[in-house]
Length: 210
Length: 210
DNA sequence: ACGAATATGTACCGAGCGGTACAGATGTCG
DNA sequence: CGACATCTGTACCGCTCGGTACATATTCGT
Image 1 (cartoon, chains in turn red, yellow, cyan, orange):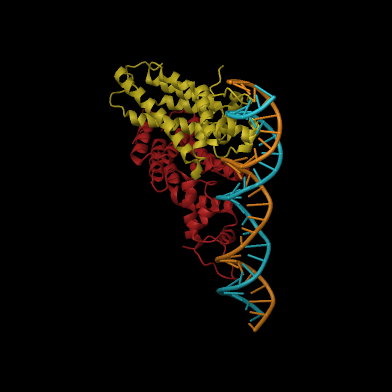
Image 2 (tube, rainbow over the protein chains, first blue to last red; image 1 turned 135 degrees about the horizontal axis):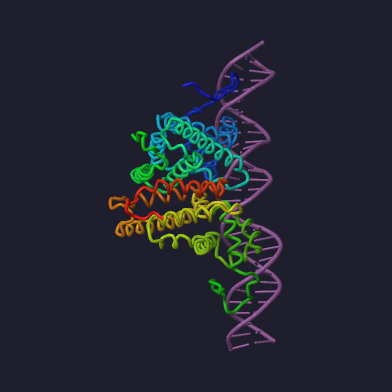
């Protein structure tokens, strides 16, 4: 795998693998959230010293954003897969079920994004907070657009409030992520998803419901 | 209103109203969460100095717990009202609707509990985290017991997984609180609630649905 | 009036935070 | 070989955090 980091042609070469170090940082951010993950936590987990971190990643905030990119790229692939499902119902089913799987890992419980949002109370973390909110909002928009298409396709009712439906699904997903952080196991989360799907609010009588 | 704080019979009398000070502290904790609310934030809002705070409330953690009690006592009364509704459906409807009202205040957005849970990353905040999780778990248990009764009453299906249903409602409520913290307005939250109620998953055909 | 008890304000503590200055090590160029 | 550029480790910076020592002020019981 080719590194996505710019490496200089001249000068002393880096003595560690940036990909591995970033993956280690990701785990720390995932578990602790942005603010609670201290530089000491990070450098220890990454196996590098502080100036090396700054040399390779800029600062804590840039490191976090790169870790967030990696997180979305590797752990949240199921989102795009969900959006590609043929019906809105299947999209939501896949989204919530795979989300449950991804966030029920006992070693890294919960969602990295959710775990980090509310951690950003200080003024210094304001931009991180905005970044996270923006990414979440982006997903909500994608969901709404998916539901608009479903309306055209005819697998949800024409009078569906797609805004509210997207917000509803997002609220559920985020609530589940929060519960996962507090120790809910995979079985419990699947129960929640089943309960939500049992009451799928916008189904057309004539649409297949998988 | 009689103060709930022990006041000594002898010694210099307190120069501020503990109730008002606690209410001011509550607002700060609500907005910022536990860890992000610094002692400087708190003392400034409460209009007292640091040693006065420690003299009256013990320390930051005890102050938080007292503020949390006040929060539940004053802002979350609708929970017990919801549990007293005649049907499970009305319980959930009332719970979510009033929750939306309570958490959509632009000045103090979101839920104090939710805003504080994930803020507690440090080791020092471990006990606060546990306290918050315990209170949430208590509410979930109350909900489950309410649904068990509803099963007996016949307004939800006998084969309902009340554990999952309670977790589902809690996930939704917490997810909504999280969205409220990120700026969702009252109308948006009501849309989410309507969407959830539209798909009320456990209704009996023969039960009134308000 | 006097001691006991509590509240108040100033001024400070040690710890941890994110971030960096600086010197030495290690590499690619001419 | 240098000149230059980059990485690495030590040791430190200023800042904020939660919490407190201490002297002073104000009330009670006797």
